[in-house]
Length: 229
Ligand SMILES: NC(=O)c1ccc[n+]([C@@H]2O[C@H](COP(=O)([O-])OP(=O)(O)OC[C@H]3O[C@@H](n4cnc5c(N)ncnc54)[C@H](OP(=O)(O)O)[C@@H]3O)[C@@H](O)[C@H]2O)c1
Image (cartoon, rainbow, N blue to C red):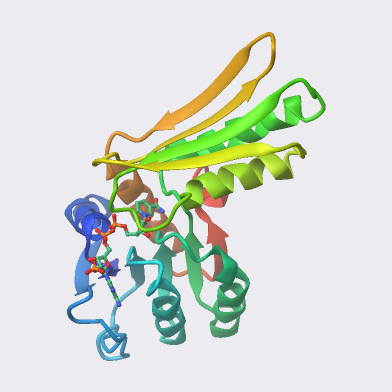
């Protein structure tokens, strides 16, 4: 499997280091120096590329997706902060007959955590004495807040039928790779559900797993749909 790394930052470099373990060869690396105005997204550069893995910035991700999909190349998209454009991206992927896996969080553990949180929210949906909070902390260089993962956790709670207020907060400090916490509190007790990432490695491994899965397939998928297959 030949891959392109689009966004050669902390995630892109980690994916490059782990790629051989997934039978993937990195044939193209794009960053702000060679792709500032998307000039590197050409048919010539992408010839022979099976899957592009996109971890760039909220400002560049949608243009990267539009152009790479138009070249007929499948994508794994880890960049967050573009959820409001998801419907446009779905239309684009369908029109070009390509494949795309996206997720605000490519950690298998976080995708299990989404389901655990949904179960707790469903059980407490009608237990009105419980009030809920959602909190996350990440390194100070993270550009979007709250994180896409926290927004997804809140969406999962809503979809599970929890309709009362969810007090939401985000912190940015130091080098933290990411902690997400969902809590429920009543006069009698507190339930705290917390996921703590130790490094970016789990995200990189999930993205490579997604690349191997989407290679040669069509359609738009969220990683949570395929992570436990
Ligand atoms: N889904 C997940 O599991 C997951 C996990 C971790 C991170 N993320 C997200 O992934 C994104 C990247 O994270 P990161 O920690 O790797 O950030 P990062 O170290 O800042 O890397 C982003 C890279 O993309 C570059 N870039 C800027 N413009 C570009 C363009 N036109 N084409 C290609 N690359 C361009 C950036 O350059 P400059 O820095 O010079 O702009 C930087 O080198 C963020 O949105 C983050 O929230 C998602």
